[in-house]
Image 1 (cartoon, helix red, strand yellow):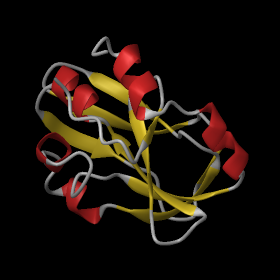
Image 2 (cartoon, rainbow, N blue to C red):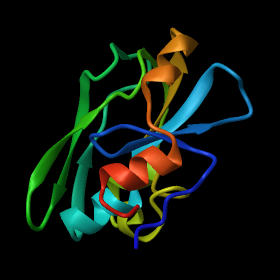
Image 3 (cartoon, helix red, strand yellow):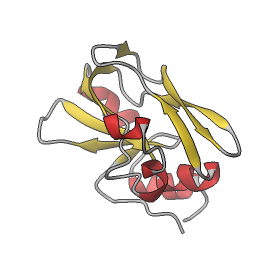
Image 4 (spheres, one colour):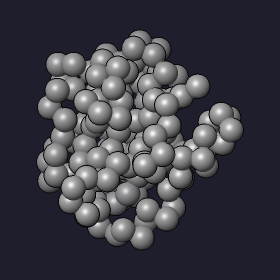
Length: 130
């Protein structure tokens, strides 16, 4: 069973949205299910601070031993932080996807887009775990 925290929102493409202490900024990464499907992550290509993305735009790629996958912005916004540790420690995505393995922080343009994301129960059903 995958770890699906109940305080997060999810996309069908397996990104998560985690609230931060700033109401208009969210932390984004890939889910425990996604990292498990990918296998050992060896490289993560992320955008630069200041880059902007529309909802579901590709914001980077993740490379694992098995495959290379695109990363999709779950919400439209501007990148305000990028996890610098993933350059040297991409395996953090495998060991702690919801913590130290986060990818970017986005300043959200339209909070209403959150309504289009999946809740934890919906995500569990989406991946066949409910």
